[in-house]
Length: 335
Ligand code: CP
Image (cartoon, rainbow, N blue to C red; front, side, top):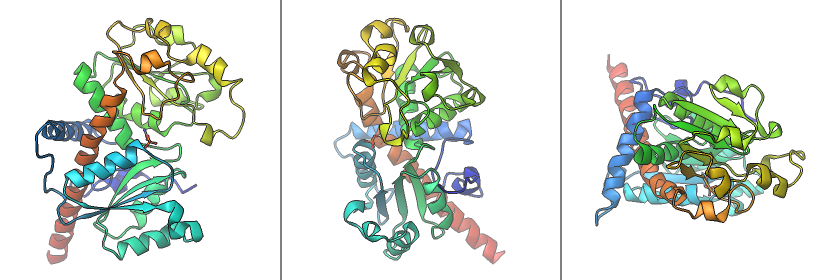
């Protein structure tokens, strides 16, 4: 575990622009909206025949995934390529990390190859902050998920998906359902939804899967699906993160499904035009029924598509924020 750090001291440049993207916590509504607007323009571009822009031409992006990933790694790679960057995917299982090299030594080695951006997934909360704190100036760090702490690009692609289907956040009641305790996605979603002005944010979970003092995040807490799903516009399901559970927190998966699995019967409690999101990977028959995951109200595959655009947005904004920082530093030196 790394020491906690005030992220905005690190992730914003002296003009308040993004130069790393570590967490949605503490970012302004204007900045989150800028990410969504920029992503919207990239989504429009992805419908065109030529899907590439030269915004990161000449830049090198290194994807450092110390944990498994399908969606995040592949959409970051595609996003970087659509921005015309050179992309290096470090295979951690065959890298020198597996021979005992420290994270810092791995980073210094990659910095010596003049990487301009690190996209990092790590099982330790705070890993991306640690790297951003120690990286060479003008190298951007994007958090692709750190422990239980944050998964900011996932939250922003969820926000883009909601905005494209529901418009304004203000009238919406949004329920986040399942393993809140171990979920970096839920934390990033809650910060983003609250900052973007969602009318009501709920969490629904058994007591054993709720963090203590979760109310302090500004959410309403429910332990019963029938109560929690009433009048909901958006249902955001979460996976049981068994890899982060160090004790038996549930009687069984089948019991969990009975009480908290999103079936068509339970979804009928929410508003008739409600939509269903899930960050993936989905576990059918554990937290969600196949008929719901593949049903007309599911936006799960839209989320994946939107993920490319959101990742293009934050990568291009961070590179631009680093350039401004460099110019400001030069002007400071010459003053
Ligand atoms: N949602 C998400 O982070 O999926 P992956 O683990 O496949 O990247």
